[in-house]
Length: 287
Image (cartoon, rainbow, N blue to C red):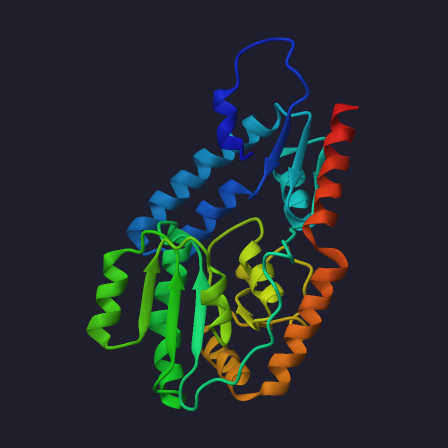
């Protein structure tokens, strides 16, 4: 699980069949941080990316099989590291745990958006800073009572302090045992990520619960969903704000997206279906 764990392998031969489940293209995360970082930090991120490329390639080439989380990642791993055997399994979601609840009508002049993710992960910190700094001022023009709930462990004090100083309604919950009530209480689920790799299961969890999603291209990357059919895509502040407002204002759009997304998950991406995929790949590697 993750190439980082390869350093724990005993130096013993012959080695049993080894499968690495690559949740991300790890070097890509550092490269994307470099793309959005300030000049001083850009050099540091680029240096880290160079080191991770060397480590990741060496680690994965020791495996008999590498399993990626999307076809897009599988292609990148084959291309970047000249790997002979890379397959992928789909991202799945527990539809029994994340039960569908039709979206409610947002409050006039307000509404609630929610994001779920560990807030000690730099990619999530960058995404919420983008939401607060660039997107939120645009939303307040039309919905002055709009609020955001950020669900995830260890949020930086700097973000909470900045929200308080600006007087914007951002609630940082910190760690919670169960995200479902927070997601169900929201009107729109947002994924404002500019950095990342792999896939974001949070998108499928929101769709399983019946909440319409606005995401950047990075936030939805690798998932088999279509913009305007299953979610709304937005890669700049203006489009992101406009997409949130569309969903808050248009009940028919909310219902259409949520219904189509949930139907897609039921047909193709339940845990039972994905577990069978993973089992088949493991048996193939061992065989």
